[in-house]
Image (cartoon, rainbow, N blue to C red; front, side, top):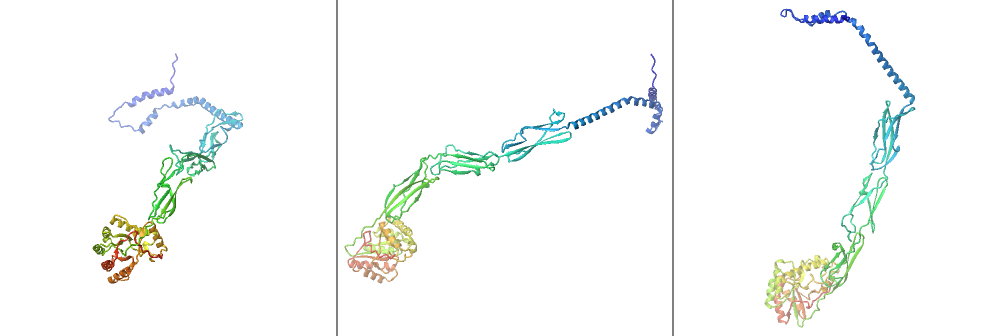
Length: 538
């Protein structure tokens, strides 16, 4: 076999490899200085064979075919692009959108918008592309608000943006929904009628419309109506169960009452129950008035009206009968009736002692003005004297302001008498007497009062003998003489004195002695005693 000759480059390499070990062998380490890179570099250059650069042209010659192929491929790619561009331009390729459903659609407010869908493909003279383009959907539809909205479908093709639009109209064509609430076991009462159980009104677009519901109550039903902002109206009806019978008003004591004249009248009362057993008495209204001290026939009306305007009523008649006192009986013998007004007072006890000493009975028309001596009323009653009403306050302007004011004052004295004696009296003397004119500020009051007390069975007493102790004199002798003069020649003498005045009390014993000596009898007043009524001026 022919032996291959070594290439000069290989020979140079072998020489280099042979010289390298010799460079590493140290000759005299302790004496030889270190070589610097500058000193070593020239030595390496000297070792490089000069023939090595001659191999370069051979490598360049080997690479020339590869560069030609790259150039050809680039040329072919550019050519293809040019052809493609020419084809596109010639084809007129563009984007076509296909929408599912109409381009303009309407959605009911409050209902969800369901996207029908859309796709896009490229289209040109040479036909339609098979591949769907990627689409971006911009959906701003708000079905809670009425209005017109757009849905945008976008794609990018051949470095250009393409878009189409669908119009979505949100409309409110649905009326609100009214829901009626129901309470289990509820039944309307006759009085209140139907009490609303409640309701709601909701609209898909406007929301809660409960407060805008119009409620119309008819005799047999209730109509609820509401209209939304779009003009859609809803209406529902409720038919409550009104099958409840009317209540009955029962008059306690009956429909007819008959009473004797008295100071006050208290209605016996009434009850009102409906068919369900509900007590409606508190809702009963009354009309009419009874003046119990004036005889006559009075009518009282009782009624109750329900929420529907239906009325149930009852009537009562009250017949007030006069209770006149018995007729006066004239005494068979000359009689003196000593009477004392305005007590008890500080001299009442002395007076009672004098009367007791002679076993003489008198009459006391008492007041409530001297609380320290009220026990004298009880003593006088227990010792057989008559007790009558005079006045609680002896204030003319308060007493004669009205009939009610008079009887308020009258009853205050009656309560004191009852407290001291255990019984009420039917005797009285008007402050100032029945003939007084101090009450003229209330015209006719004395005429009305004298009739009233008479109708109630009271006997009022004036006087026919005055002692003069009410302002005419303070002289005991004069008082005695006035009484003697007044009683002389009279069968029944009713003497007016005041036991709150010592000068008047001081004359009593002399009067008793004079009367006894002259054949007079002393008595206390009673219902049948002579009344000595004055002429009434008011």
